Length: 227
Image (cartoon, rainbow, N blue to C red):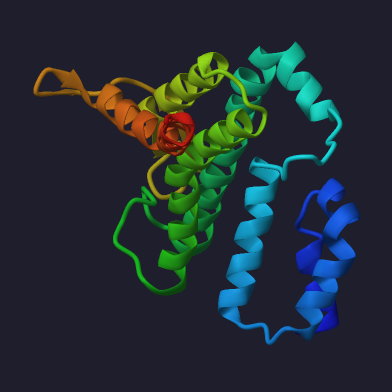
């Protein structure tokens, strides 16, 4: 394997692990054959080491860990909402700029398109729809990494799910064809489907997806400790 790539892969591991095993592991990677399978295994092993550190390694409490204990409302409530707001801002900016660049004469950006314009808008859609799920997974990862109870992470999951499920994007012009296009976001439950508001249904779907990795970890932990 290339020396530089081997060094970069070792850098993916936590510092305590690198200090004990890094030199030997880097030498092993350099003499190995490499390949995609080897690369995937090393990346997964580094990720696993961050979540489940090797027993015996002394990992001090970081500032991040301290905030998780001292201000869980900020780490699992405020911070995820700010991240989601930033992601929605980027998605709305992509929608607005794409409307201005590719559809300057259209009354709305929600029209059939293809080519580069379609790719540009799809990037915004991907950010918009994936942001609640990814942020929810990040909450679960932090909770697993810090061995936290599910109380505050659940608060974050619920907030993210409610915002993601009820968020709605609207586009309008100040005047037909000649005015400035505006993109704005609102929050509403929407029409009911079989007695359940559409926004609440979407929130429940988001909640189930965001909690899934954490629930899988809890089940694996229970199975591991059970006789």
